[in-house]
Image (tube, rainbow, N blue to C red):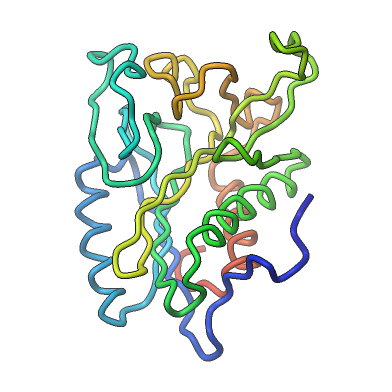
Length: 237
């Protein structure tokens, strides 16, 4: 269910400038992405305009601050990057939309839980516009979809797959890193890790769910959902 109350509102203060919306061309090296985020976060902290940067990466694994070395099943398969975001191991690669969200929560709401919930809302709203029901779970970060066509889990509950991951970091209340939404990545690439340290559930994508959508179409819906939760954007269309 989409939130309709203001419990987790992350709209900016009145009079705030729109968030810059930028879409990268081609695949962006992870090192370049980190360097760009560091530079942008410093500028935002000094009063610059906020930014959402949409990218795709070449195949790689990232290790969050809670990563367990045993969850890196195939350490030689793709490059592995240690990162300062929260969370465990995750995969990035072509066909996956990564949204690096750099916002100053001092201009919005200084509440990390509210920010994470708002990011989940952005994904859930995006999926809803494509007739996919995304859901959050109290004990698992990210966005999940039920898979009634799959066998029941060992405990007798319905199978669920993860379609979007979240991992964030804050510096002086400015956010960076963000979310990744599986549009049409190679799902076998996730087998080199235990995604987010969770082995009982699978991973899916929009195409895996039977939706042959293009990345540009997803981006349009993602922007609409972001503006509903975080406010006006400006920049690329």
